[in-house]
Image (cartoon, rainbow over all chains, first blue to last red; front, top):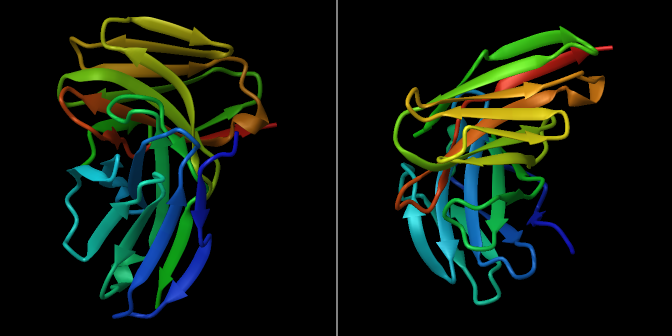
Length: 113
Length: 111
């Protein structure tokens, strides 16, 4: 069974630009969660989607958004990038979400210049 | 916001020794999970312990949970250099749809 796939793995953007990150969950998993990881803040929860519905959202500004498609693939978008958005963005899938085991992708490393 | 806090922040031991990491959390939980992360990679699930369990084993891993103290510990016995990684605890709260992670413990096992 293929694991969680995140694309792109690395990207460099400049301030003010926007970025879209993609996540393909494990086949059959309906829940996708997104996390931002930085050295200073650690792993911060962004949002969780289940069957195309956002069920929960972390404390991030509206510049951070996401969506989930009918095939459970998910995308997150960050608009008007700031230097502080430089981070490793991790996607995790699980069968039902809530308190189940999370399966993580390798992450997308975003650098904002 | 983070739910759990790991202690210590960093731990350095020799191969063969045991490593103990602690996690404290703030609110009632459904379960607590431990994950491992090799540098710059995704996290890997290690073990899950439910709120009605007190201890759980998996190979060289032993996890305890004390809900009265809102704390958990992860013990890695007979550590190996390959155990070098960051270890995170994560908690799922009642009626919530997300897992919150602590800041992690950076474990270094010297050969």
